[in-house]
Length: 453
Image 1 (spheres, rainbow, N blue to C red):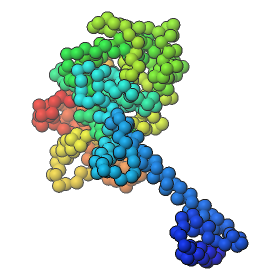
Image 2: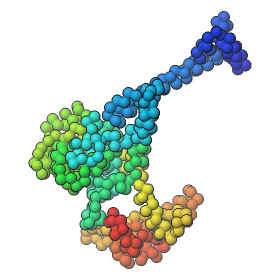
Image 3: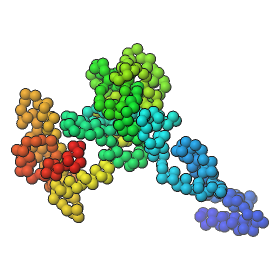
Image 4: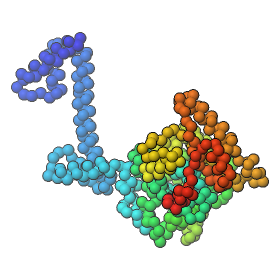
């Protein structure tokens, strides 16, 4: 059958070659004599060839139009010369512009602001875009989770996230800490590319240290989901020079527990669209809280949606970050990486702790963080030794991990690095007796070199 098909195609080619005028590619197939029944295989081949031809043509047209659309979206105006596939006197200039646009992909955050940071945030927002932001809650890890929730809510509501800086926590690092921007710790260009999402920071939008105080209307999850009767206060809004007026969200519990403050992602998303927003604002149980500086009460901003706290948010159950289905973890958290600077700094400390040179390869090791400082305050009248897990208990768990790695992965892992905020020298002597190693930040003068964070 294959030989017969090839013979027919060969005959069609010869017929086309002797024609007075050139034929199109589709006519080449049509040269099979009409009196001859066309085999099914040839019909299929013809269909596939024509299908591929039209796909190529459509792709070519879409590609040309796509360049024009991308120029319009990114630059804010249509550049007609770039949107054509025909040569023109400005072809060279158009080619350079297209090359620049390829470098500046759609998730380049600079395309979604008017320019450099302004004294007032509203002056830097582009009118055709919608944004979303929130504030901090507690410790650094909780804030990281809250910011990941913020990014995911931005994804499902088609809004551009604006991430605030991490505030220094008094309970964790004491006084003298500074605010740290998200992009100083995490690789934002990589995250934007992996998520294909423009992600902004407040330092991109508003000038740091500007004397201009902006009034902003926000939603309060805390006032709507708890019996506190107030919004969640934090220091970030002061740092950003914002005077915030809050409106409580309507109750939308994630679980059937009146004492649990968790709310669903999609419940919050509904507030960011006209119908859900209108219903929430007209709710008879909605509460308004005037701004603390100007004593102004305004509705939540439509272009820049904001929430007082994004920590207690989930898809199915409270505190679901430990679950593999957690959307904030799966679609955001798994794509977050340290900046190269932070990674290199951590590697240098690991080499120091394990007594390795720069040329030595880093072996497998087990690490654990034993949080004791502020946790010990929760022991109440119970002694710390009875309240907190002992080093012997941690040693048993470490040995279990070693055994599993040897059985399941055929890995013999012996090195252990431990970190802790414990200050008792006797406790650290026990760590040394176990053969574990640690970072001596006092000896390394870490705080004076890099700050308390």
